[in-house]
Image 1 (cartoon, rainbow, N blue to C red):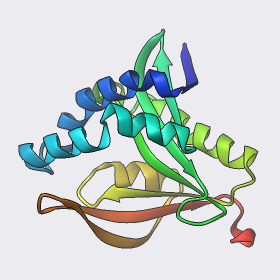
Image 2 (image 1 turned 135 degrees about the horizontal axis):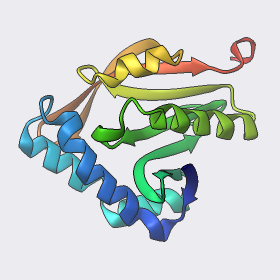
Image 3 (image 1 turned 90 degrees about the vertical axis):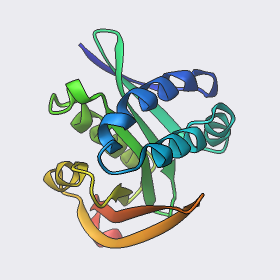
Image 4 (image 1 turned 135 degrees about the vertical axis):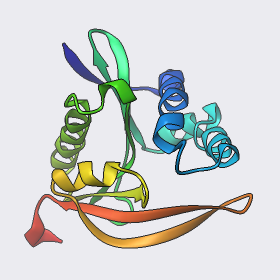
Length: 169
């Protein structure tokens, strides 16, 4: 049985555990070991995650038979009003292709509808095979950006968007 639940600020260890299990497989051939460790430490610091929740970010976990298999992080009205930003959407490697990622995207769409938001917006690494997953679900590449993140590292991303109400943007 698949279940998606929202997480509170004191449940961020679930997200951290999943990130440290998923990222090496997802980014192991894309990023150096040092960059991978730097980004995990930076993005998944306990206090940073808790602050994101208290400032309006929404975190969800997808469970299968009671076990956490993936997570979703959303930010309403980013980069602008009318958008819902998917900051993170990850599923354990052995469960990719099982429909859990699609279930998390559907959760994001449900949140967008509840908030009367017009479009989903995300960045995906230009070398990440997840781009094909997002395109399969209707997302379009609308740009590229390189983001300096410190220590001489860059995030080299495509910017993708899924318009839910095309006439309203």
